[in-house]
Image (cartoon, rainbow, N blue to C red; front, side, top):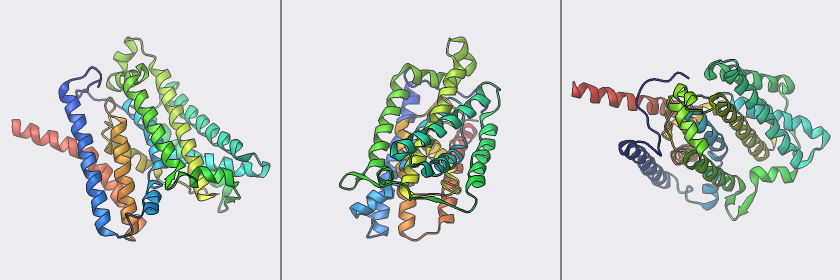
Length: 333
């Protein structure tokens, strides 16, 4: 993805103004999340039921797992639109392996392995051949899902073992699902990596100016390769949880999830141009989208309307900051 000369900041070195902007955006997301929660309680008497709230978490946990890795990749100035295709391919591989009875551990290993290989393939095309990541991953998006359609056609894989199904349907305590615990743990890990480690500072530096990062001694290609592999692995994790929850594999699984994942990341305050963003913002964005879609579902709103909502939200989040700058520039002139 091309970068512009717009001013950006490194959070650990940057300006106080940049920090205030970031905090205010996260504060705004928090306020929006509270408003959506209140609106849902008023719109449906079933929303506050503990088990319904638990079910609502499934609307965002699997997508948010990918969004954490995607956030790092976009901060570094790249993007991966093949994540939903990776989920389809990983799920198909796990379903195909059922005939050999690999067990839950074997299925998990297959899902993670397929995600890793797909991420590595994307990374090699981008970092070794110098191809634009948006073009590469649009191509592999069709490639990975196309393989699933070739293998499955209009059929489905079923019969996953119960211990594997627990990964998508199991509860750790009362209404606290395993997926929600995994989501929280991954959020903490990614926040530490991005905001407190040298690797995280390298990601911000690459997103701000990859040429300057190269001359400062950062191995830009290696960092980007790691991020593509990480995104692939997280897609594999999402494939494991989603397949275990659904109990079956179809080639249309996770269709159009890439749009929702990117929307979570951008709504969370991660600059689509790279160089800025936070994991806390992504967590809040995931909560907002999850509660909004669940609330609409309780009101029996058609799925196509939810898709329109997601697409409009993505356009608005990208366009509003630029409109604000144009208005401010016009007033100054």
